[in-house]
Image (cartoon, rainbow, N blue to C red; front, top):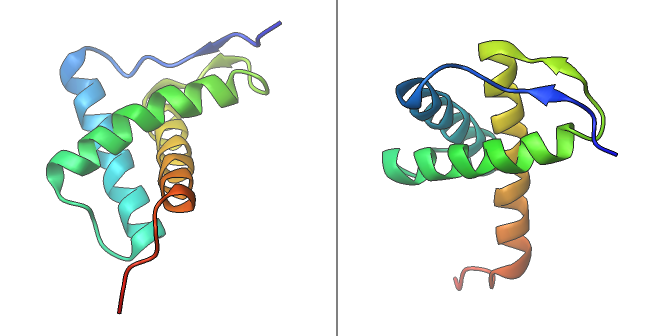
Length: 92
């Protein structure tokens, strides 16, 4: 049913580092500036779960550290896009 995707950048500190980098990159791409260190970290970590789930349908094998950052980045961008779709536009 699902492809076999392995994301393992290392221990907890490595996952936090991956989440921070992915969230920061997603913040830069999707907004123009970061959301702040805590929100970047949360976006990156949640993005890793979303990206891992979605990439699991299409990719098999070991992604490694840089692949984990890429997957988390794509997931964080998707998370930002979804949150923008359900939020009200800013008032001018």
